[in-house]
Image (cartoon, rainbow, N blue to C red; front, side, top):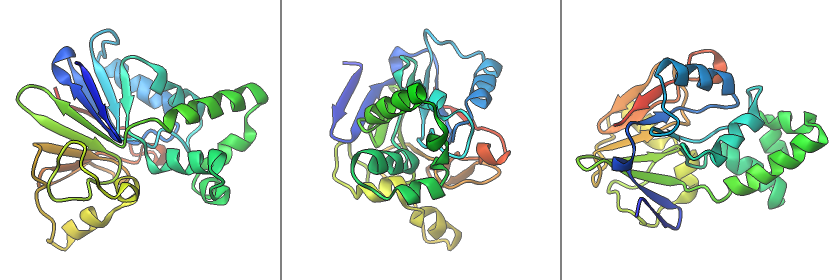
Length: 222
């Protein structure tokens, strides 16, 4: 099987793709993504692009970024911004929290776009929180904010709120108290914006703050 789902985990057989890339937080920056894919000569038939989540909010083309989850060449983990929107729209969550954090775009949609956005966000609720990519010689884990355990295992129960929200590990690294996560070769996270990517042990943080004008990072993993 090319893909295996286990709860909030998705395992992908990377050998079926010519190249695989991971992209940082998009936050509605659809045109910026299209420009980057053109620069790397992305092959929509044979390559795969994986998002670290936060497709929406703050940028200007949020519906287009959400619609990426319907494309065969695209996979994504669920970010905290998708979760805020899902909670607000479908689970009586705090809509003010979402709007305060960039969700006001939803209020300005016309009727057809609102219907589409709701349908896409309903689909986004089914997105995995953790993606494992196996390329035959490497095991790479993608999650939005963190893998909140020091040993990775496919299907392992972890604190799902920490997966989408936690910055404890990256902040701890500044105090010299972080370390390697065992069980995989590389972990790739977004969520914590910085002007450049940051590599800490076997963890790579790739949210370069595209929506704040710092550029969109695309990391090739195969």
